[in-house]
Image (cartoon, rainbow, N blue to C red):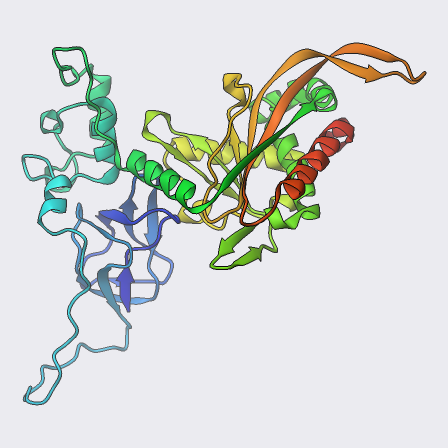
Length: 403
């Protein structure tokens, strides 16, 4: 059985084999750790796909290859290597090995001036911090610099590359930055974006946060934010407006049976990633809060698993911590909509009293804005969805939901 470079996320095109845990000739059991892979988004351990003997390693440690490339071969315990043919006449030659994405130019980009292979994570750190990798002593296989070597070098106060004399700083895009840029351009070229927003009062959510926030932080170690409440209401609204929980395929709209919420996580200047909460509509507010915190933490630590980055059906982009008024986000293809959650601030709001009189009260208010693909739905459908989302947030008993 061939050992293949796995697809580590929907947007990942290549990976670097960082460690082989078995050598040719050694036995391995299905599910046993076989090798490790590094990409711009995740570092992950890959188990053996079958039991047997690792007969070949086709891609050595430190080499970067495309998704789907043959990395090695596992022969079943009862398999014997084929005997050489005595007469090759009339026998078709064996198929050519899988083409790798590492001919000349790409290999040079994946190695430093000393010829040491550089993983995607190391290349990202180089571009992000502007350091000369040749100055970093590597502790990896064959002296290659690892991400820990680069971080130790930075912690030791290594000097950055000097800026040009005119004061400009030239910062090459990291691979993740390039990937993010390419996807954003492709999305705008693919989908006719339309942007709508509604103003939402979060007084009921705020009451729940005040009632349970201290106990939550003591128990969970993190603050109880607005995001899990919004996500819970969003799932309820999507169940009523399923054409927004969909994707466009050719000339058809594919409405998904599951609600898998992607949550955009900022990774600093390098770009962003969108881990996915599977079956989010089945989770409570508390479970959603834990899922968001877990995925965000692992995204920033670069420890997401490949499964964390796939099968999203709708995405939330959260800029609220920065106090933004509203954001027009770009759709995460092939989805058809994305919601932006922006800053929530206390503002005067006109309300009607029980006696039918008008009054002005102070409430926490923010804008929820959606970009949608006009191929999939029209403005009235999106507006009705946003109205329903607003209604759920403003009328639900969130304190009871957490009690």
